[in-house]
Length: 92
Image (cartoon, rainbow, N blue to C red; front, side, top):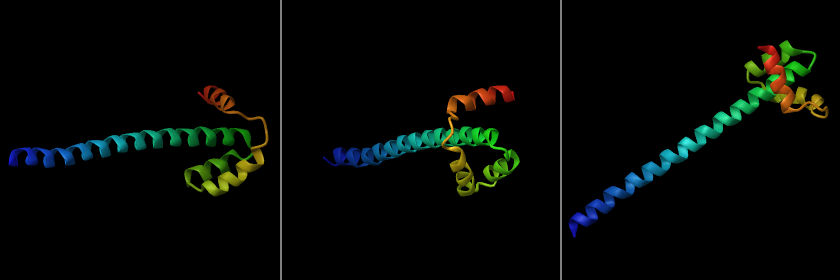
């Protein structure tokens, strides 16, 4: 009976550790996706507005609130993410 309890109590932490590791992997993957979306949107805003150097500096300095305020002016136009990809291709 002692052996069964020993194996049970040693297995539970292993399962919890594996579950936490899986959760961490999913969170890191999602953070990468969000970072890429932010980068693509920032580049699109940079290309679309008349002040690209200022917007790029806001992006680099991680002043996203100011960048968002500038983007609000631009939000109502017909600029789409597809156009961002076209701009990025033209940039290369």
